[in-house]
Image 1 (tube, rainbow, N blue to C red):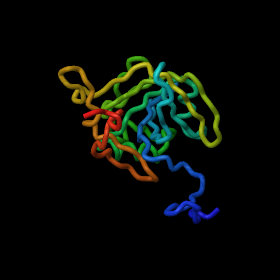
Image 2: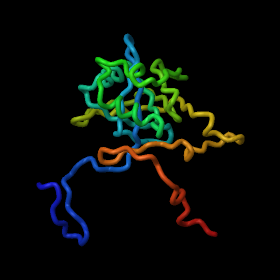
Image 3: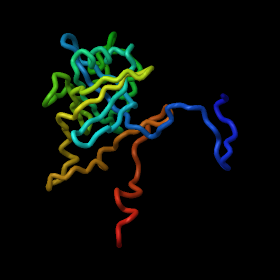
Image 4: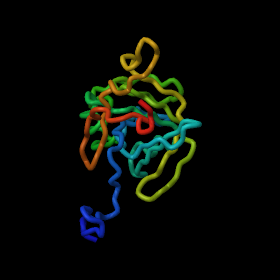
Length: 196
């Protein structure tokens, strides 16, 4: 099939099946084997899969260095990228942890997890610690479903009442090969049925 063909629906082009879901979060996943230095892998194939218990998934190619580390230890941390860390996020996606110390090369700071041996990235506004519940081979990627065991957030995102203001985090999304900072709010959950 060509990349785009005529669709029977007016104003639509028929595109080949591809991973076009967008935007998706741009995250740096930290992991560490039983021996050796910690590693960072940039992943866009990440998502929430369950509310109770809180769980998320990441998908990693088996040939990636981080796959072995996560498979071996059963743990990883998802570190949300923001505008300040987008360059480091990109670098961690294009160089291999087999040959590079990504913390050293990016200047990112190793932080302590509350529930894992793997570290978190201090510069990231949100850090989500996960223990692997399931590993599912899907084809090009293996999905790791992780139970969320702790969350750390930057103090400047929490107000005096203890409420989180994620809108102030300048989070970055990924769409069709490009990074975008999230923009202005256009609604909130339930606003379509809220009475004035």
